[in-house]
Length: 90
Image (cartoon, rainbow, N blue to C red; front, side, top):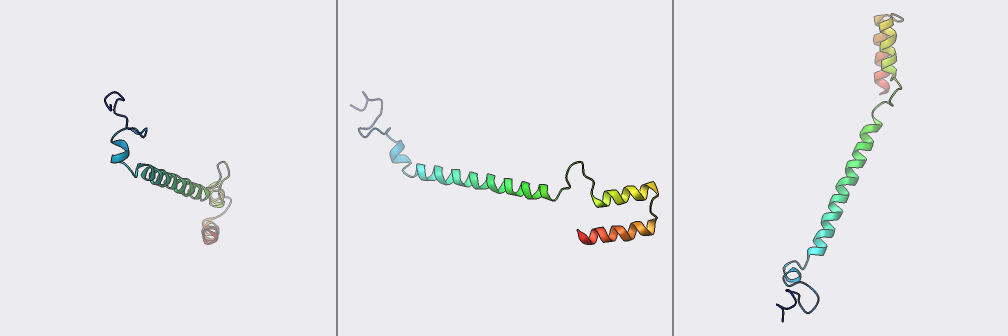
């Protein structure tokens, strides 16, 4: 009789699958939740890393100070003092 039904058991389950993997659904759920947790943690980590970067197109205070020093608007001593103040704030 089982040969006529191509290996299907009377309960509607394929022979072997129900008996071989009784916890398969639970394991798939655990695997799915683990992958979802890793994805969420990766997104959070990337979001935090992007907050530490200055906005695109807007120069930082240290960039502006360096440009002023390069143009000769301030001398080396003033540059060092102001750079130290900027670094203290960060």
